[in-house]
View 1 (cartoon, rainbow, N blue to C red):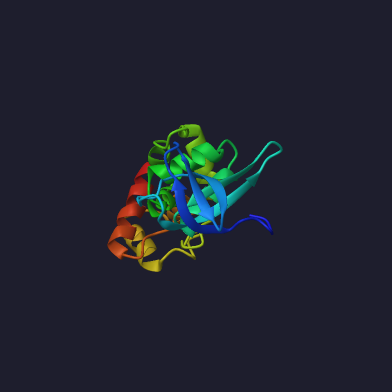
View 2 (view 1 turned 90 degrees about the vertical axis):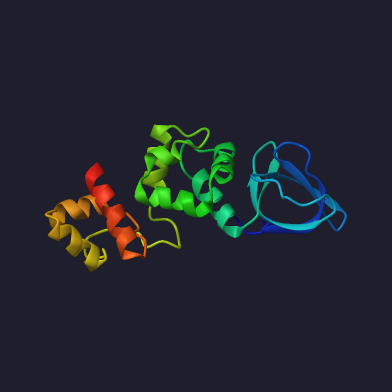
Length: 191
């Protein structure tokens, strides 16, 4: 989002009947916003949407989101080659932000490919492009950054340190040790 772009809108919901669009009255100006999930409130209610402004040669399009996290995920997705705004909106519509972030971090190609408009090839590209770009994750890039207790557990199970580093590269492990070990074992089995 560049300087001078609209960051959020707060106003009265005027229209939510057109598929994928709402109109918000902000001090007498009606903003037509393309939205992933329509607000579950009656017309006339004041709402706030986080906005991504897309400037194209033929139009200025506002995309609206209920949270800054949804908008940030949308913006990351549209940076990925082969993922346009419609597909990125579909991703936000399809699953919670935390679930999609976890799927990208863990390389869950199958889950990502369930998003309308994303096949296996594009899912691979999304994982490759976005893994490690989330501010709220602890992406792992080499064994020295991996949690020592997880590495120790995998070593005790007979895996080689080089094998562990390769399989877990870029994987953010959950904070819970049991869950982290389960995810690491799953990743080791699939590599």
